Image (cartoon, rainbow, N blue to C red; front, side, top):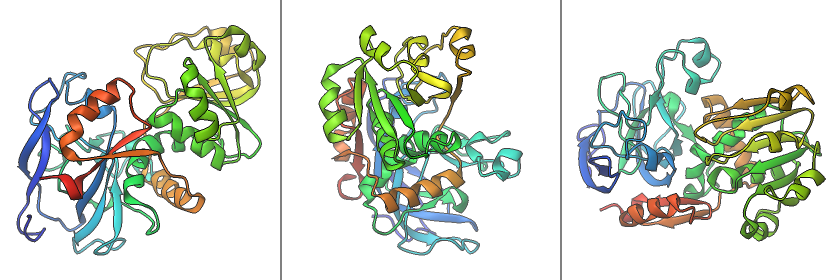
Length: 356
């Protein structure tokens, strides 16, 4: 067991040592609690596709050993003297970044994830003290209070974890583009971790939701489990023609390469298309934007203001991600299943009960 948080900072976790991405037990040091810090005993951590990409060095700057995990939830066990918004035993979460310059235009507007100087990612990044950040596949974390978020007491911690990446990645652009207007129509491309959250938020906002998929096997879960209003096979030209110019908004969560023009044709005049997936390239005809005055934008997670609002919204409207809770020792198998799209819809590691 760890001793008192402020005195001993040896942390247990699971780390990748090389580009194979294979994770195994690892002990490392965390910084002592500073004046503005919160010490969090991690209870659960979501498994994001980033936890496949970064440990396998897909971006070419991996720093090993690497402890992944940026959908972190847990319980406050110590706070610094300047911390005023948290108390011992609060339920809290940490997302995809743990620091920023705190003084640029983006930070001052609560959009720290778009910091103009330096966003410090939750893992595989260099923190302000020069240390390499390590993520939530670990027993505890020390975080500046600005990047720590109170989880409403009635919200299950294992369900809260995916909100800190999958949830906020779709919630933030939906609010920014005013997709919270009851009666409007939303198309959701892809039905994975992000896609299923887009459907859930769409329904909670009172939208008419259409799931767009290339797989007929997704139809039952889209209509019956997630309560979408419509399901369209996007490879079926007739089905696509039948809903042409019928959608106010589209959230595209697909990361595989796919055409954009057929989907853009589904938007009404002045419709908005938001890309949150990560295909290798984006190709479209300018006419797909000119005709119908359509616009396209992107998004990566969200700022501190959006995250706080999302957590309150989810608690008030009982929006819960669908999760499969797993033990720490199963994480390598879970990552392979994630690659093979064999999860409904987010793995969450039970850190508190299974990290040895």
